[in-house]
Image 1 (spheres, helix red, strand yellow):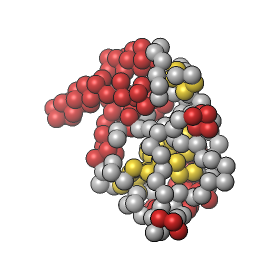
Image 2 (spheres, one colour):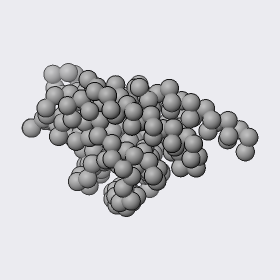
Image 3 (cartoon, helix red, strand yellow):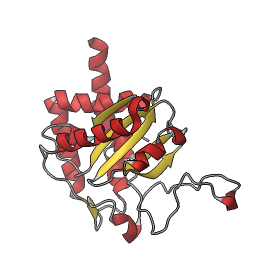
Length: 220
């Protein structure tokens, strides 16, 4: 599912196995990772969602520096296996209110081939939280110290271009950035059963902005 509709990271229970490790009771298949967080244990990994409310904060000039630290860590860990690393999501747009969670896009050759990149990310401190094989083999890792969502997609995934187009449109168009901010702030005033419901409620405006971005690209 698109970035603005992705589930929140899932908290790891004490003593939980590596999700890529074989489960002898399931014929060697890796156990599925939950698609959305819920309950008290999960709240430790989503400090921007409390009591049904989504926490949005003003743009923080530190976010680009936090992203750069993660990008350097990822590139050092993966070397040439990191085909691209990009700052995405609301924290990548100067002036935009956001959940205090830095979203990072990592492009690899094949996200399904976890052995080619996941062990090195884990050695650098990242934790695999979510696996979505039916959506461009998306993988989600959490960062080792700051609140970071690391999204892994393949080089051929159309979601990569979609995420970057949305980011670039918000960076360059004042009206669409203001529209998106108004939408986020209004929705953050409401109570939600899950943060995913908040994300889903933004879908119409996200697609509207993407439509204008595609139209502008076609005229360029």
